[in-house]
Length: 383
Image (cartoon, rainbow, N blue to C red; front, top):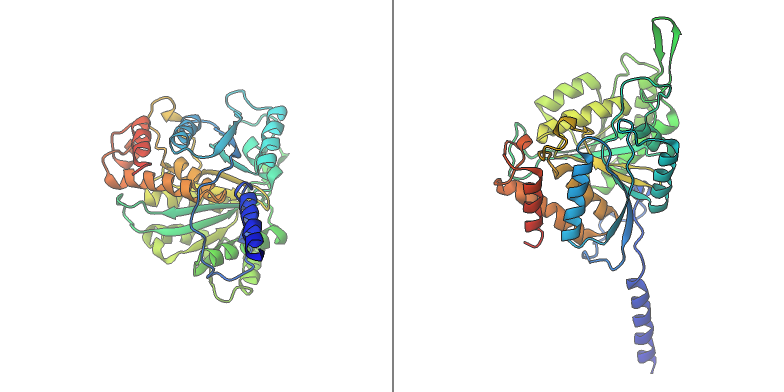
């Protein structure tokens, strides 16, 4: 009798759990609370459908998002997109539109987006819509995993490094003014609170991912107070993680070292502008802007986008853009949602196409169109 009752209770509990919606992870999931050697449960298919905000952006962004939707449909991915078109250069930007996008992102907590092009002309507002999105959601940590693609050779093969960028202050503070005609002051803001926060994020990331070293990138030899504060904050946080090696390097030397010997780096953490530059430089080491995924985190939200933020405007409508970076970003998004089965399906299909070498877009030395690449990925989904 007791055994029968116990089995009945367990069955009832299992049914309740199987219908429960999995909660997506966020930046706070990088704060570790337990052993790192706990075995992970085998990946399983989810029964629920996740709502995700989609912002195609400018340039080839809309074309790449179409690819994502086609691949997700072919892979039967349980994700439903809420799509919003926000653009400063296509007359699709307003306070109302921004509020709609923010409301969707805050409700769904997960988004995938293309690059929202920022015009260089000053029209009375210094902060771009891209920057305002990051600030409203407090997307303080940008993570770009630079990883060589199997089967595609570059000057440096087998690269595996991570660039972590603070992206809510620094040179991107939108604090500029013309003090007298012909003299413009542009303020760079560095705070101890946000410097320590991004440093802790970097060390937590390194700990969780089994990385062995964190390198802080700076220009404290010239900006002794601003970058000096960032460097000091990183050093203070490093003392709390004795198992992880800590180093620092000046930004100009870092650029040279990345080109000459990128293998010396593991996890790099840096302020805003340096991260923007290093993201693009490092992407060039493994194939360019079309192959490197990226993601941004706050304590509550996660936004997935390409690692090198390039709208690739001259390729619009030509069917030549490389969908690799966006598809890998989409795969990382699925992994963030605990959809391991589908995440692995998409990422492995992309990597198989590139490794085979028969279907490559022009940026990787091939002749395939975006559509041909997409069809090849879909063909590999079930392989």
